[in-house]
Length: 232
Image (cartoon, rainbow, N blue to C red; front, side, top):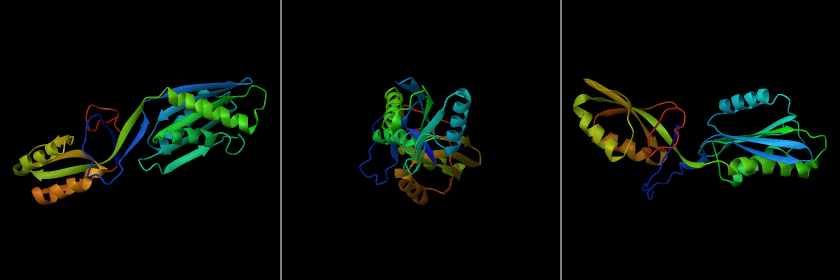
């Protein structure tokens, strides 16, 4: 499955699958200070737990002298992959407040890491919750929110004589085309938002001789002028 972003009108009156969600467009930062402690928040658009691990490890190296590197993330259009990490702070005083800000903004495919430099004065659990919550909110306030569309990629194989039928379906559904190979035997790849997959498959089942195969997941696409895949 891939993720797409789009800008423009699209008829969704018959869509029964919730395949869209909100994320952020790029990395942003936030800051909160209290009694000498500094809380530096970094928000990132991410898609996989591997990306999360790489970013957290990089920030730990960049801020090697910080006391804590707490974080939370939520992934996927179902928003069912998540984690909140306190990194040595009292239980639920850091990761949970960070995740709470992610959820209160209805976001997914996002990681927020808050780096703490200890100022010598303990803040107590209420103070920590306020600090991690406020620094995260500041980072998210700087972010541009974007709508993402969950989609499935397909490989189409067909004979040259059936090309016009295939192309008409793709054009009628406003679907992108990549990795085209046109000869006696033709092939191309396309991406279809989840709510349109059944209609897409039905059209090819009944309209032309074409083999349709699902392709393994690929990265998300950044914002574009229309529903289309852009490799990153």
